[in-house]
Image (tube, rainbow, N blue to C red; front, side):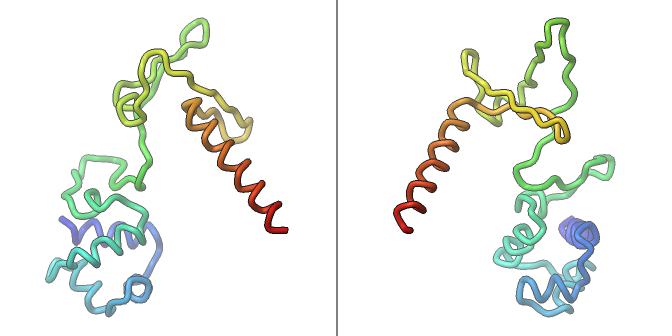
Length: 145
């Protein structure tokens, strides 16, 4: 139920009911009633709460499975499971990851690495677009000076 999710997310974020109320513009009593299940927030407040907690609205309002270890995941974040590295260093990208990121056979992927953070795999087109955006932003800043 939404009340359990609201309470869980507030505790994860280490907010008091008063802080949540201040951040979304409602009374502390309203937050307390939502968390106790006495009342439910309207859609406007649900959207504000999802944004505050950085989660998808769907995940915030839907019933979570108590057996689910992860709980409510941050918006846009995924865990696709483990992959095994083959003898020649190849990995198989899980089907769900390929679907979420629209990866198809023949796509070119860029592998980035940071010895402290790990490895990231980015679609080549996305990386090139980011580089172009950075370049354009730099040109714009130079024109402003």
